[in-house]
Image 1 (cartoon, helix red, strand yellow):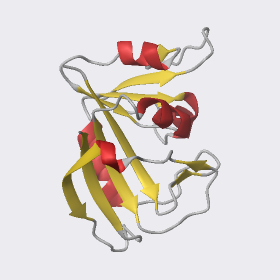
Image 2: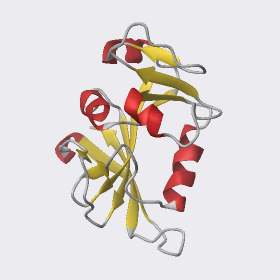
Image 3: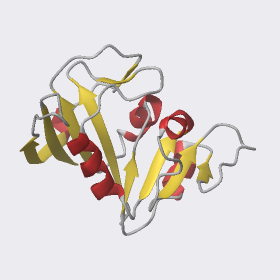
Image 4: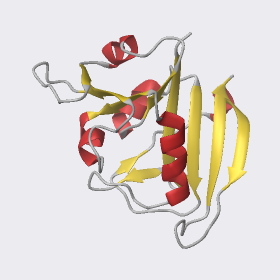
Length: 163
């Protein structure tokens, strides 16, 4: 069965981005993201793709959602709707939704798993994660992040499965 997983880092105030950039740098979170998504399909909106430091993400199948039917991006598969993106998911494997805000909102009702990095600081932002109804999710894993020079903000790694 196809598994759709959301992976996101959210600030205390649900902030996830500003000016099409991440709000913080947590080395531990970036390593976790790479470990979980390498070898998998990652699905994102075009703005998220444009914000990536390396495009497309290496060693992953990159699916970019755009509403422009003529758009093609080298090294990526294009999807022209959420339904089209779902149809491109790899069956029998985990497929990761990696942003941005509107893509997360549209995938929340159909996601099977939810990898959340909660950054315990509020940030100024222009993109926020949609409200999460935690009554629909069961916490299956919780790990406190390490705060050090490469990880300056307190954070927690959480994994949820849909109830």
